[in-house]
Amino acid sequence: MRLEQNENQFGDIRPQSIGSRLRHALLAALLCAPMALLWGCSGIVSGQSTQPSPAPQTYSISGTISPVAGGSGATVTLSGAASAATTANGSGNYTFGGLANGTYTVTPSHAGYTFSPSSLNVTVSGANVNTGLNFTATATGNPTYSIAGTVSPTAGGSGATLTLSGAATATATADAAGNYMFSGLANGGYAVTPSHAGYTFSPTSQNAPVNGANVTGINFTATANPTFSISGTVSPVAGGSGATVTLSGAAAATTIANSSGTYTFSGLGNGTYTVTPSNAGYTFSPVNQNVPINGANASAVNFTATPQLVHSAALSWTASTSTVSGYNVYRGTVNGGPYTLLNASLVTGQSYTDTAVQSGATYYYVTTAVDSNNVESLNSNQVTAVIP
Image 1 (cartoon, rainbow, N blue to C red):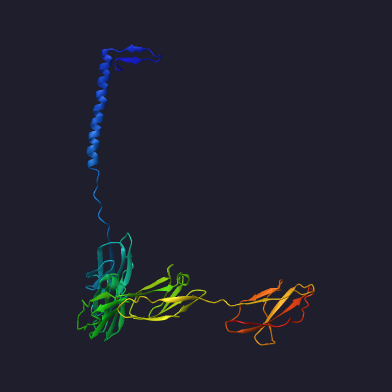
Image 2 (tube, rainbow, N blue to C red):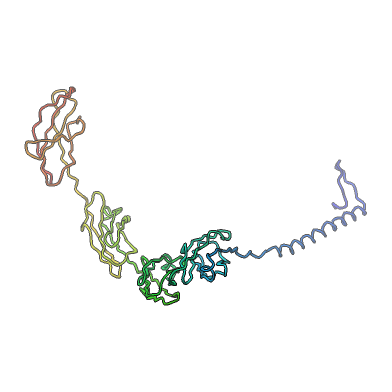
């Protein structure tokens, strides 16, 4: 019905001609056709929109070893974020390519030469590094060589200390990959020994005789030392909850007992330890415990907390018949004095509690009255307090 009628601006409806309807139909067809074509093309284009990921960016490290006599043919070793070795060309130039961002160490070696510096650290961060990585080679009277190897796995090798002994002594620290090197060594007998806190090594040491050539492959395997724990409970809960427990001996540490009075020290090696609890207002039985660790955890290292008795002496007296500003309280440890003043300011009432007393002691007390002119009376009669 709507194709055959049209509403004019005054609201009346007028019939349309057949020709007009035909023009509308053709126009609709022409509009739909490009829309369908565009929809189809859009589908094709979206199917080709995924682009391959770009290859990771890599960089290079380069430098020169001079003079040519010591640089040409020198071996340059790269360690750190990646490991590699290259040989300097006839001009003493060297290059390491294809490197990711990271920290590296460059170390030159050449029989019969020493180098200044002996190695250089370099950080690659989004650009090639081709300045500041030069070395000066100095001929020695006798050729020198190197001893190198790896400590693995990385967890135990990275940062391990290698000690050289024998014909010369030195120490070196393995890089992040566990690699190490001793250079500038003359012919002779050497031994290499690794060490790293928390690890044992196999073998514990290796001989590395140098005889006219570099020595490589002096490798070690690191094994993490087993660790153990000490645990126990401080009871009852009133004295154990929040108690401070101190560890001393082969290692030192402190921990806080939980709301149940339970505590634990972990990551401990073999050795002898002492455990001591403390909590304000409590004494403990035993006062502390010695705990030997030898290949096993130690549990049930328990303590009993006992509330400390709070001792005091409560004093009272009859008010003075005169008008006074207050009273002073004196204490002595000998019958009849001398006495020591206890209160920092005048006591305005007729009572005083002495809390600074010790169990088993006997104390002697007197009081005096002080008027508004700060005139103090004679001592009252003495009273005696025996502290249980």
